[in-house]
Length: 328
Image (cartoon, rainbow, N blue to C red):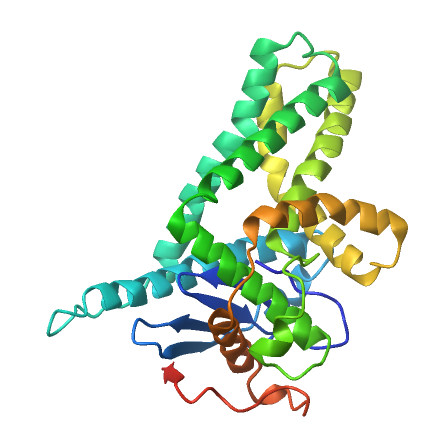
């Protein structure tokens, strides 16, 4: 998942889905998937972010937390749509495949909620518990959070590394690479073709992978400072206090990570920023793979559909692939 930037060029972001790519512009989202018969099917939905509609939400940190939840809900819904299309292809031998209505917003919210609870349990609660039970450093704020943060990052790396061996996930990571290459080509204002996009790297500094790494690093420092303040004023801290104070602040940490990614996109020429984004780019060696031209063709169709008529740059391909079909 690539985050939006503050560049003058129209900001776009995206996400890999099953046999396809979702692209997001300020006014719409478009998901393109490659069907089993070789055709590209594109679904376009009008979409304006909540922080654009509610100006009071468009403030630093808060907008990051809101955008994070919003992007997760959109991601789940588009993944479900692509999964439905894949199932239709699996059931193509049936005369009348069952027509799926897609995932509702309520179901998407519930799915995201379950995913958040599981993620918080694995990547926040468990590292705190293990650090408390195994190491005798509960009263040392910085050391404790360095250890807990390291366990958190280790769990995340093992999780990503483990799923990367799954056949379907490998394919997903190839489309992730196609998304990045296509966005790079668009940002560089070159004609959008698979051949041109193929020249770019799959490692994008605004990727959702980089965002997650940034959040983990920020949480390590932030919670160390928070624990120090708690012990300064109350003189004591334990696992329960850490859970009560750390977990509610996770959205705030996400907001800080969002702002850090936005800032890094504006200052990529700065040495300190280049060092900050190295861990996220390194992890993309696992979460992205080199796509083929067919996969890039899908990503390009998704981006063109997401841009719509708002973008008239003559350097960008405006002709649709002949095989593409649009689902209403």
